[in-house]
Image (cartoon, rainbow, N blue to C red; front, side, top):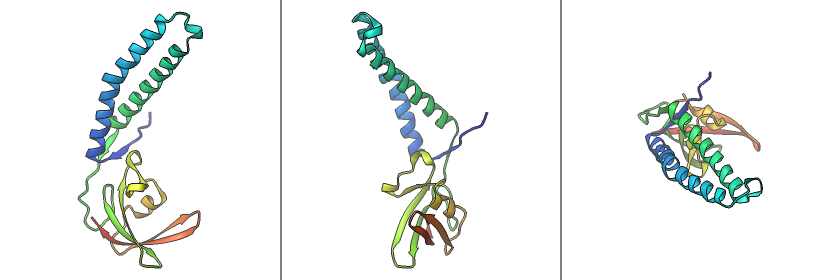
Length: 155
């Protein structure tokens, strides 16, 4: 059996634990009540409410299973990086050639969100940056061609 290691911040782990708790306590109870109500309506073979409640139940149970697996294999990332990019590092890069700078935080795939500057360690840019030092230049192939990034700072 292979494990699917997830690199997560403590903040994301807390968020996932809260979601898991909500699903196990509130959502399961709501679905049970929906199923009981739908059963009271009669013939289950033609009961849309019952079918919908069963589908919701399957989705919630799948999400619970997914969250438990993520949390079981989670590794909390440290943000104590000085000069080398690692998991949890915040990196300031300069897009070359030019003067445009961008700031990214390297995170696990579960909490990646490019819109807020969080890139996955498995993304092309994340893979290129991890393990590199301040002053290094990395090249990332994109659909628009190769882009070079110079690492200016690691926090």
